[in-house]
Image (cartoon, rainbow, N blue to C red; front, top):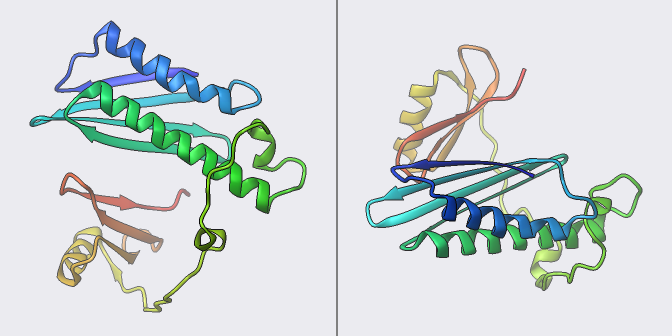
Length: 182
């Protein structure tokens, strides 16, 4: 795995870099072969809190976790635990749902202990369906509509390109825009 470690308001010391590479590198044990992937790590200092975000794009799977803690080393440990849970959860679901050759099942080692999945987690249940007309608007108008409704996201028809897009409120209070790739 290739590591891309960045720091915002924080100097990445060799000790910090080594700790991240050691901890995230332990995830390799969950795969049959060492995945060829870039590991994107973003560490930052927010007031008295230390934040870390790890993204590992793999073929057919995206692993991503973030954690905020008073201590950066503790935050690294917690984010690696989240990634391990994601891998185990994917492995458990993949073993249940996809038994054919070429599926994600063959990406993971077979000796993983499955996560304890509650009976409620067996089936994903849609409890509510909403239907509405997608009104053409720009991203700014969509953000205003989202704020007016008090939601964290808003789906709209982008007036600029005609695609269905989503605006959302980020944890830092700013806004994001999701657009389909051409």
